[in-house]
Length: 143
Image 1: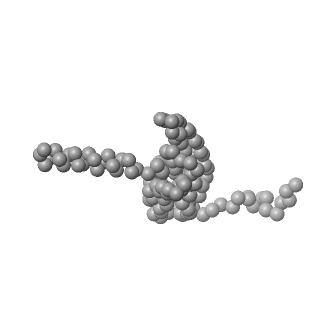
Image 2 (image 1 turned 90 degrees about the vertical axis):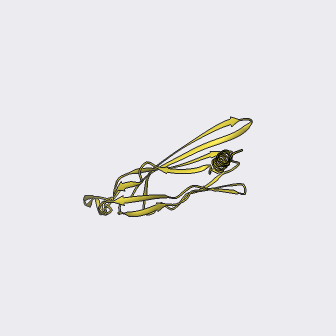
C-alpha cells in the first residue's frame, strides 16, 4: 500500500474516532456580538442515553435571564432509550465588554460531560437599571 493511501486511511480513522468522542452536551448562541440591552438566545442541548442526568449551568452574570423555555423528547432505538433535552434562555446584558458563558456540566452515574465555553462581545453604552416602581406610586398603600 502506498504511503498516500496509508495516510488517507489513518486520517479517516482519526476523524471517525473524534466524531464518536463528541460530547452529548452542546451549547449555542444565536449571536456572539450584541448591543447593550439587546436580547439573544443561549441554547443547551443534551442528547443520548442517560439514567438520571444532573445539569449544572454556568453563572450568567453579568447577563440577565429574560425568559426560559424547555423541551424534552424520548426515542427508543435498538431497544435503547435516548433523550434529547433543549433548554433555551433569552439573555440580555446592560454593560459593554467581552464576557464568557461558561461550560455546562452534566453528571450521569459516574460520568461527566461538558460543553464548550462561548465568548460574547457586548458593545454600546452602559444602560442604567430603571426603577421598577414609578415615582407616582412611591409610598402608596397596596390593598
